[in-house]
Image (cartoon, rainbow, N blue to C red):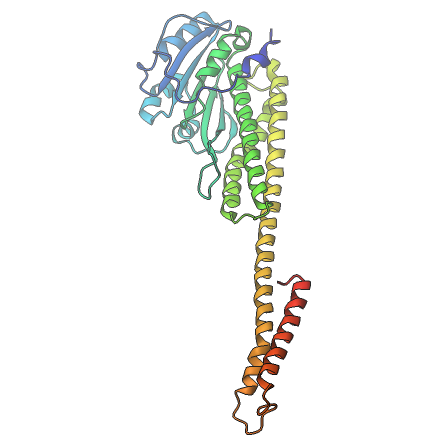
Length: 361
């Protein structure tokens, strides 16, 4: 029954971005409602019903579940759903106001899960202030006969995911926890895509730093580190919740999905390992860049010092002959002046040759 599970939750590239407005059931519950549907035995039931009618239909039949999708709901828009499903006030506050760390919380009648979504911001060339990683959030309330998804941000639409799941009823037949797994898998897959794109940005910066002309873009390195930090804040806190889902069976999670959550956990571990490696690599690139700057400054100082040493010879000779002494060496000799100039030039030439040999000039 779950042989096609992996195919069902792997979405083709590229994924559709933006808000899913495909379903007409936006209005009885407010403008934040993106989709509301009843599923029985993994099949979407015909008809568009508000949430109260949909959940009553499910509970009277004793089969299936309701999936409600919302996008950035206000407290007023969310109030009816909160009362209908008995959601915990603390979880509701987190879902409305967003900006939460990824987490998994157990309540009496539901699980509350927070995922940080990420998207790589396309650019022709990395700049000192250009955004690389854009983040959003997806919250899920998962109960026995309902799943409520609340999305924040301009990306991470769940419309394509819903369509993929509906194409494989065996997946949705596992209940609301199948949606939880599909969302987790989607989010972690996006992490993998973004880390691959960030790897390309790091490769570009590394090539610039070690190019012949060198790089003066320390700001780009710091910008990458800042964006990498945003990605780590999304992925690292999610490790424990996913490991919990991949461990012992828990309420509101079908035990047959444990193996598949374990696969998601493996992918998430790979993401965190890559982020750690990227951080270390960027530190090395930054150190190399600073070393190059130091070497360039030393080169400049050596050149200046070399010319100062060369010019010190004529300065000294001119200083001596500029003194008001009555008796000066070779002062009354016809070839005295040319001789002094020639000796001065010869000494300067020898010093210049020595610095040139030693690589100072």
